[in-house]
Length: 110
Image 1 (tube, rainbow, N blue to C red):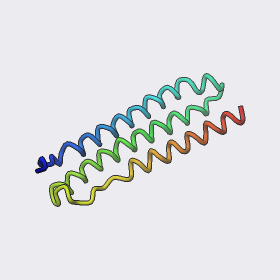
Image 2 (image 1 turned 135 degrees about the horizontal axis):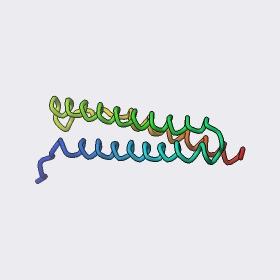
Image 3 (image 1 turned 60 degrees about the vertical axis):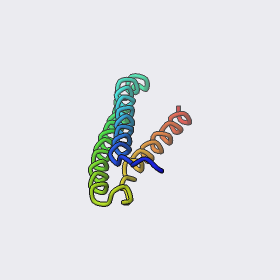
C-alpha cells in the first residue's frame, strides 16, 4: 500500500531550490560588480556583474512561471500530467557555460 502523493509539495520545493539558485547568482554578481572593476582596473568588468544579475532575474521569473504552470497541470491532470520546466535549467546552463569560458579566457590572457 502506498501513501497518497501530495502534489503541492514537490513543485514548491523545486521552486524554492530555483529561488536559492537565483539568489546565489545574484549575490555572486553583486560581488563581481564590486570586485572585478577594481581588480582589473577597467570599468567594463561591471558588465559581467550586470549580466549575472539579469540571469538571476530571468531564472527567478522562469521559476515563478514554472510553478504556476505546474499548478495548472496538477489541477487539471493530477500527478500524471507532463510537467513543464526546462527553461530555468537551460538559462542556468548557458550562464554557467559563458562564465566558464570567460574565466578560461581571463586566465589565458592575463
